[in-house]
Length: 78
Image (cartoon, rainbow, N blue to C red; front, side, top):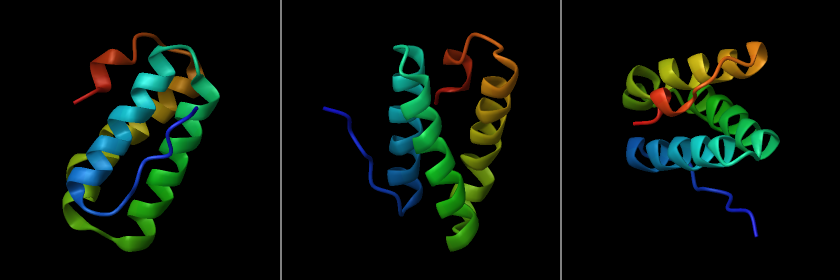
């Protein structure tokens, strides 16, 4: 069963990012990427400042790495 994390506060968003990276590192890249994409969209729409400052940059870097298939993603985890 796949986990769909909650988004909201900076702590929830960090946990969601960590879940996404765990999926990616375990080989379920599509599911991890979908979580990251939803989280990115959530942060952009809610304009939650702490998440935008602390989580968004590493999330965007991880999404970019997925486009170019650069390993390892573990470096982007909190």
